[in-house]
Length: 415
Image (cartoon, rainbow, N blue to C red; front, top):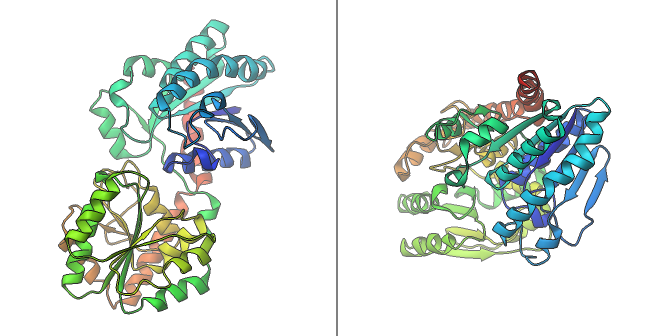
């Protein structure tokens, strides 16, 4: 089988905006490791080569002629990129990649991500039928969130592709639109399980040993319960827990409202940026924060720094009100962190067994759950170990072989 992944996001720095890039990177690398020729068609950096081959992984940076007019980021000029992607990619993909492969006796699998690629799927479906090779190609379309649902022609999409999503929560949300979706969860790449530098973890814990340190990494978005998290810090401060929130948001304007709320609650916020990557950069950012209550991290937190952050803080707040999957919470588990999730798409979280699970945005709920852990080192170690064991079950090879490939085979049989 030959695999083709269609996505706006991808491995280039230009193309990374959130969890979708992590998903397609991990999925593509895993398919290659399993021996499949894999092509990733994404909106890449306009200044890099249009195509690049890394072993059996073929990178195709599409729409570069449009992206050059929008050098800021992948979703700048989104509608123009979407129109070009959906019009020009399907004919090229069919004629240059799928048709030659099928003529040699092979099969192809197309996996498209998010609402921006729906028209590409419909276009491909028509072209493959026109060429008489539709039965040789399995097509899946995946929803990672509810964005753009009101613009999707669901009956036409369901006739062109098998619809999938990332959690049972999302499956039920899609049921509200009359859509029956199969669940194929996100996975974790091998680097998620790398042990964070022990020296950095020990140093960060030692630096704040007399404080309650929590971390949060998410887009500045009301769904991520940022304001509720800030209020939680304020309540911890009122009860003399000496809290410190290490916060990393995005570029969204909502962040200004969150920080205004923090100031209104009497919390001291400091901004920190750094240039060195990894644990060293993170440690430099928190070297001199004094009596600050919130450290607003303004630089990119790379994977190594993320693992140090997750492992060394007392709890990782992945407490969204609407979370299609909750990749950050799972990454925190893999790093050995104490994950505190919401209760929407985090299928992996079992309250009190491998995570703290919040059903409300009330500060007292977190404080009640966490108070049971304070000073109980055996319980903390048990929770950390259980989280790591859970994360292992979501390693991409396990997801691909246990869930994805059986769905692909089912699609072949249906075809």
